[in-house]
Every structure is written in C-alpha cells, then in structure tokens.
Length: 440
Image 1 (tube, rainbow, N blue to C red):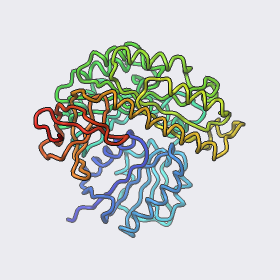
Image 2 (image 1 turned 120 degrees about the vertical axis):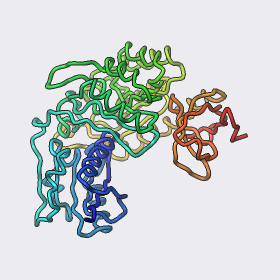
Image 3 (image 1 turned 180 degrees about the horizontal axis):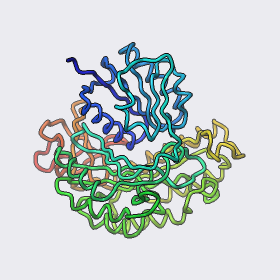
Image 4 (image 1 turned 60 degrees about the horizontal axis):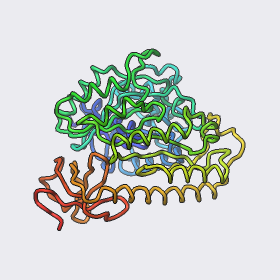
C-alpha cells in the first residue's frame, strides 16, 4: 500500500522547531513518509507563532503555497496562533483542522482518515486545561538539536501573549530529559541547545517546584557523547551567580548567554512588568565577564513600547552601548490583543518605532564586530556545519563566533581547532584550520 506523505512548515521560535520535529516522528510512527514542503503531500502541518508580526498574513500565505503544490491536501494548523485565534484560522480557505496547545501532540488521532469537511474542524481546549509537559526535540540536523526542557510561563509581562498560548510553567523530569539527551547523543549530534519558554524557571510539575535549572544543567553535564550544551535564553533575574559559575567551570556548557533585557529604562521595564531593573542586568553582565572574559552575550530588546519617550529610548541606547555585550535581537513593539500593553496610553508612532529599531540594529552590528575583533588571533574549537555558500562552509565556536572556511566534506559535523584571522563580514570570521591551513 502506498504510504501517505506529510510535510511541515514552522514559524517562530526554536521551541516550535523542536515540537514540529516531535510531531513529525508521530507521523513517521503512524506510517507516513515525510517530504519537503515544496513537494506534493497528502497532509501539510503548519506550526504557527503569535509573537512575530502579521501571524494571520503569514499563515494564509503558507496555506496558499501548500495548496499550490497539492490542491487536495489536508491542511492542519497548530501552534501558538492556533491556540489564540482558532476561529480566525478556521476561516482561511483550505484549512481543514485547527489544533490548540493541548491537542497538537494528539494529532494522529484527530487527523483520522483525512476526510475534508465543508468547514474546518477545531479542537481547542481552554489554555488552563493545558497542564502537562510533552517532551520534544528537533531532529534532522546532524550538528545541533534543540531540546525542549520547559514549557509555558507564569510571568505576566504586559506585552506578551505566550502565557495565553502555552499556559502555565511546567517541565519534564531530570531523568526523562537525560534519557532524551542520551538518545540525541546516539544519533551523532554534537551540540544540544536547551530551549523552552522560560527555561530558568525549570522544575515545576503540577504547579509545584520539584527541581531547579541548576540541578538540570549539572545532570546534563555528565551525559556522554554530547560535546556542547548551549542555553538558548534565560531571564536575568533567574541567571544566578551559581549558574554563571557552573557554566564557567563546565567542559560542556559553552560560554554563551542570551539574556533578554527588553528596555534599558527602569520606567519602561516597570510598564512591561519585567522582574528586574537595569542595575541587576548590568550586574549579571559584569559577573559573566569576570568569570568568562570571552563569553558571548546576546540581548533581546523591544523598541516603541507604549509610554517609551525619546529620552527613554536614548537611555536604553546608551545603556546597551555601555555594556560588554556581543549582539542584539531587536523587536519593534506591535500591539497584541488581550494584552495589557495594547490598552496603554502613550502609543509610539510607527515612524519613531522604525527609526529606533534601525539605530539599535546599527548598534548590534557595531557590538558584534567589536566582539569578533576581540577574538582575532585566538585558536578556538569550531563545530562545522554542512551549509555551503560560495565555496565556503560555516561553523560556530563555543562562544558563538560564526566562522567560515573553504569547504571540506571531512569537516562536516566535526569539531576542529582553528585560528580566527579576519572579520570578513559583520556576521562571519575567516579562519585557518590549525592542522591543514586551508586559508592562507
């Protein structure tokens, strides 16, 4: 009997990618063949995001593309946007099923015989009913895997819809996560990126704290076969001195932190209901650099938040400029339904939001280049990937310096010592391999 084919498309964060991979394995276990999205499939699963702009527009476009490849295909929408706006998604021409947060991992049972109905079917329980942790990790990239260790969030930031889309904070058990890491190691993957909504809050099960994030990373540090563990993002108020010290002493956890700031103005941080002030953030950066001078530090920042004056933004700019950080992820604030921020006064005009975003993007390029230049002449271990562009392949050092070297198939998924030679672009450093000197 001919196997049915399924294709996937993922919008949004690393957590979504890990969950798409796990959903893909459910289909494989059910006898489906996974094919690229641009090929004809019987089922298309689109994993959506509510954080990025224009979720509806993006979802509609991907659905239209799927139907172009396979007009009679069964289209299922899952993810954060599916939890928040199921009825809106059900009205998109071609959509057959919408699955909320509690239902997406039971997709095989829901999808049944692929019979297309006149109206899209919605399975979307209240988010309060979503209280179990479903493990997930990405698969298919030999180099690195995103391992989900936590889901949901108990914080109440005024701009964020994630608690509405994913529910309360919850985690797997340490033994279960260790088993998954061991499975990943057996596949030949060299690096695991720990991901979640608020991973520093790891350890809550059934509403009670059972473990701490520090306990988890200490346990993962003993897993054989994984060369590197990378922490995807962690709140500054949850990044304790103990965690920083452990990473500094670890042979497997790499010197790279991505730490959301969102604003360098204490006034705006208060409006956002963030759980720290900028002084704490500066202390965290200082402590990291004291113990790991070459550590890479990435920062999330939002511009144009309601009530952010020109001076508030300039305070943020100067604060970021003063910090020993390595790059920025800049987000332009956009209103989200059912959030407190959407009802706040002091809306920032779109042109001002755009101008502020451009200023911080330029600052990010400056910070990244300065960080890269500080690393020149050093010999570091790089994990090379399989991507090839203009005859070069790329890889990342432990401290997240993106490097490039002339392509050599023997280097794919290998960790090799290289010397950092020259900043080629704002985003890459040319290297010479310590053994073979591929670049003179």
